[in-house]
Length: 254
Image 1 (cartoon, rainbow, N blue to C red):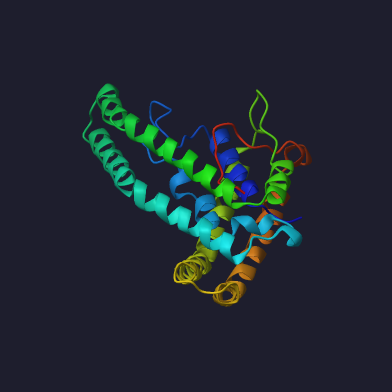
Image 2: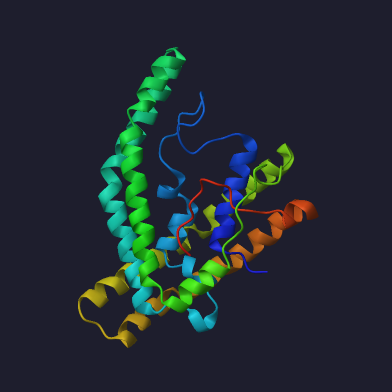
């Protein structure tokens, strides 16, 4: 069974939810401010043109669509860079305050300064998703809607043991390291294709540029399959059947 981008995001969210960790200032001891959707593996893969790979062959993204999605991600990254840098600075300030023995209230006050920035990032990300959604054809959108993972129920995602969490995290970390060079190559090729499209290149010329990343895409796909199979082997039958998308996690479309 093929691993989809949303499955990656759901598995990451599953591990976070079951471990009690947060991707924002949601807990009293949480010093993370930068939302997971800004710099997550899911966003990286979507920007590299991998996210659309889950579409069936007859609905595959065109060269123009891949270049357009890459351009939207680049614009989002550029527009939010200053805000992300500020959040990271606040995280560092909060960690320094904790190390210095400051009170929980003082640390919380530092993190609260990021609230308006988080609101802006959420709006920018919603706009990014809406813009990407418009790149797809009606047929592609219908397929994506029909294949979205189900949302988790009121009890949340299926519970994992601590041993399972550690195993899944280790697998995900190994996957990220393994595909990092290929994702960088794919992003570079997609950016070249986007620049060529802006310069008036033909569809055939753009496709030829994108084909330079075919081997890298194939390696990422094989790595995805191996990760999915390895994680499935860790889960119980009940956990596999109850896999869902944790509420509050927002994988880029598709």
